[in-house]
Length: 154
Image 1 (tube, rainbow, N blue to C red):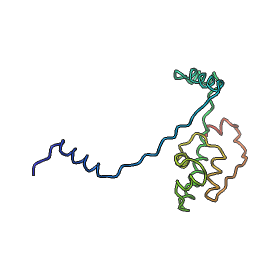
Image 2: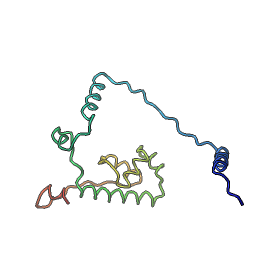
Image 3: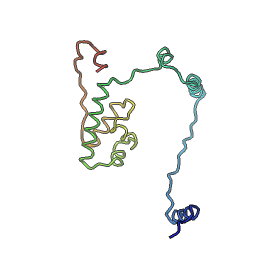
Image 4: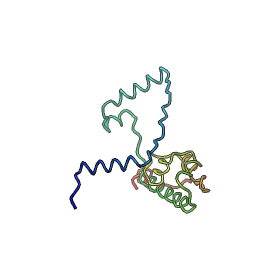
């Protein structure tokens, strides 16, 4: 049997694609953003300040840099979110259903569950937990003898 030319194959593929139903994309909602003159000036000031990529030294000097989450806190948060995800999946609650219950975007929930987050608030985690019938307990612990520096480095 003779091979078909690539051009003929692409026509055949395009015909096959034409027969498939068109995928409807959600309409983009563009919010009318009316800013006051003060808000416009503040936005422009931030844009001007960060026009070039600032160095770590300049960020530290400006006071705009905040310390990253300590490793021990990050690990504790990952463990909490893993337990919440396990509880959600054992209850057979989908991400869509959880998003509807909490009002948190499905993508954000996925990021929280997989450890890809930007320091979520306690309120966000509590909304997640309460939506699956769980609660979050916050406590106070004694730091090691070295103080906060040893704790943050751990």
